[in-house]
Amino acid sequence: MTPPDVAVVGGGPAGRALAAACGRAGLRTVLLDRAPAAPWRATYGTWAGELPADLPAEAVAVRVRGRAVALSAHALGWEYAVLDVPALRAHLDAGMGRGGVEVRRGRAVGSPAPGRVLLADGSELRAGVVVDAGGAAQPLGRPAARAVTADQTAYGVVVPSGAAAPLVRPGEALFMDWRPDHGRPGWPSFLYGVPLDGSRVLLEETSLARRPGLGLPELRERLAARLARHGVVVAADAGVERVRFPVDVPRHRGAGVLGFGAAAPLVHPASGFSVATALTLAPRVAAALAAHLPGRPGEALAAAREVVWPAGARAVHRFRRIGLEALLRMPPADVPVFFERFFALPEHHRWNYLTARDDLRATAATMTALFARADWRLRAQLVVPALLPPAAPLRPPSPPTPTSLSH
Image 1: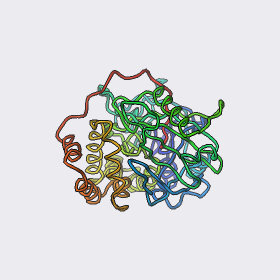
Image 2: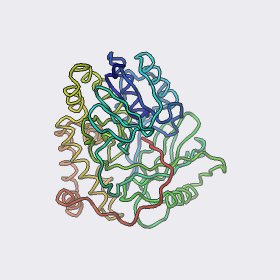
Image 3: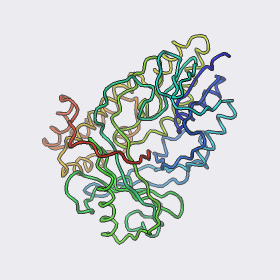
Image 4: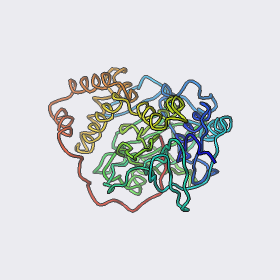
């Protein structure tokens, strides 16, 4: 039997989007998923302006204006969107069906050679090009000793919109609220509050990044204290979301494998967002693959890698990682000060830093503007991490906890 043109490992939004795009481009495509029928339980939020134009309206649950609080309140100037997860899943599955994508159940454990995927049951899947869309774990990545990661962690509860009104006003999303209303010392955390639909709001105490991640029990206690301070009552049977994912995953370097989605990684270390980027890139990656397959798989892989990681994106990725290391080294009291300076920048600078993944000039302009508005103490905190190795872990990692990728 002739192997398929493309094998996509990982059945999340990124994997399904790419598999559907490959099928639409005329490529014989297989999607390998550990649990093809399992529902997605995460909440996916993004900037509305980053969503692809052809995403159906029903895949977006809400679009609201964005707001942030550091030392003072700031309007972001653009819309925040929360995706309707079942509708997004149905849209992507329908696209795979139209493209003739074959879905197989299985767990990948490695790629011993280009075009080959070894499965946990000892069998092997072959294809012209193999894509690792298996998330931050990078199941087809190059084996290496795992360092302690810098994780974004959060603990959230779902409350009625009326109950959330003291913190999240109708028609808005609270991207960050750095006020220390939880009353706890130590590593900084913020409140993230987004409407899930017209009647429910997710309120989440969030640690932007810490190496290792701030523990969920601590975040749960902070959230309870914050909500109590604002008179927000949480029902005993309220829905709960637990979040933990790394924001410093290394670029995928599996030999003969294309990394995509969080495995690439496409995760923005300052926001945790990646889904909209994956949805937007998927058709371009599929077109690059289709231009060379089935006859020239090596050229197809190289072309697809160039779409995911052009020179500009590689440089911006490096700048963003320096920014992450600066936050990891920053004294807790200085973090809200940093974000006050950032949110006070002109709208185009903030937008470019949060979205323009391959525009080095725009990213550099934002960082230059931020540097000009900073005092000498903050300037040193922004520059020094570029000269140092990654910040050391603060303490031994916490025991594993359930995970959910929110963005």
